Length: 227
Image (tube, rainbow, N blue to C red; front, side, top):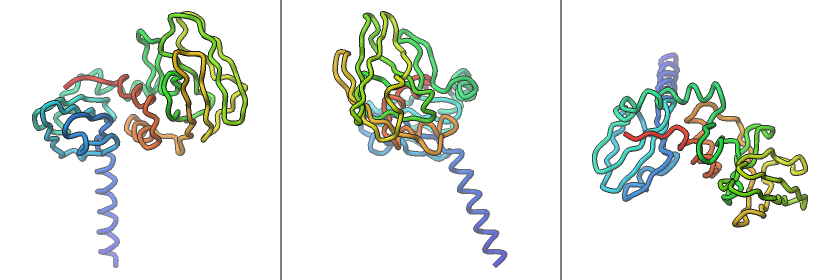
């Protein structure tokens, strides 16, 4: 019995070690996309065999790497070839604000509801959820109407990409929110993440499972690099 318990404990330890070392596929396109769907975890010893026009984006605690076919690529080799700034980006981002980066489209954060994209919006801490619009050239009054019939209007000034979440609209999982006042109407569906994920891999996996594509794109683009 003691021997069986030891074997079981060893197997569990090996399994947990393998899971911790896994690299996550966060984007894929091309002929091999079906073999590498977003959310697929790859062990450290995996070799990706990519065809022409294949593109696979991998993510782990060091950041992301983009692999372009044709060719065979080692998961470990792709990680070691990533630029130092990308390989250490995950750690520094968690200390500050995961997924926050400033560019021509304002400051992007994972915890923004993109008003221009219909889909799910993942929530970790309701107080951190804000609103984002991609085109900020002109001022706009955006109206949010939730599934309870409550309405709030949010004013965006010219060159203003981000705004606070309106106090009149409760942040609650399952709630659908219709957005009008921008170039196209959209619908947001709120999804609470539980438990709250930690690290880049946990965050990406949670966003994939909840189908929060807009936020996954922000996370991937923030830590993107090419291999």
